[in-house]
Amino acid sequence: MTERLMTTTPDDAFEMLVAGNQRFVTGSPQHPNQDAARRTETAPAQRPFAVLFGCSDSRLAAEIIFDQGLGDLFVVRTAGHVVGTEVLGSIEYAVSVLDCPLVVVLGHDSCGAIAAACAALEDGKAPGGFVRDVVERVTPSVLSARAAGREGADEVLHEHIRHTVDLLLDRSRLLAERVADGRVAVAGLSYRLADGTAQLVVSHGISKPTASAR
Image (cartoon, rainbow, N blue to C red; front, side, top):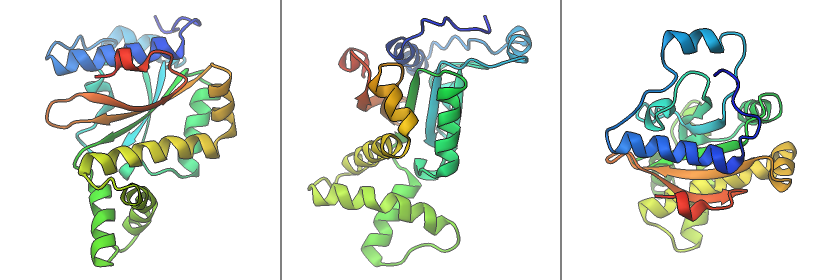
C-alpha cells in the first residue's frame, strides 16, 4: 500500500528498520516494495516511515542495509553526516510535510571524514577546497571525544553520532518540539562495514531502545 498506517509510531518505525537490518545481516533480505507495482503506487505521493540522515559513503546505501524499498525511506546524505541548513530543511520537510515519525543519524566505522579530522588535528594541515569545510564540521566531535578521554576509533565515531543528533535537536525547534510531544523519535546508529550491523548509540523518544538494539 502507498499510504502507511496513520498509527505508525516512532517505536514501530524503529522496529521496522531493525528488522530490515537483521534480514540484511543474516543474508535473508525480502527486497520489499521494489517492483513495478510499488513504482506505480508511489508515483502520486510518498509516505516514508523514516528519515535516514547518513554519511555519503558508497557502502552505506540505506535501502539495502535496512532492506527497504521505494517510498519507505526519506534519505539525506552528506560526507561525515555533517549538518547544514539544507540538511535541516530536508529533515524538517520530511517530518512536517511527510509526517515521518522517525529520524535516524547513521554513521559508520572507517569514516573518511572522521579520519581526515583526526589527521588534521595531528599534523595541523587541513585539506583544501570545500573538503576543508566538511573536516572543520567534524572536528568538534573529535575534540569532544578526546577531552572526555575517548580516543578509540569507535569512541570517536559514537561521539560524532551523538554530536550530530544533539545538533539536529538544538538547531531545529520543530524537530525538538515533535520529539518532546512524542510524535517523532531521533536515533543515532553506528554501522559496521564488515558485518552489516547497525548498533544503537543514542535515542530520544524511543521507549524500548535496548530491546531493539544489536
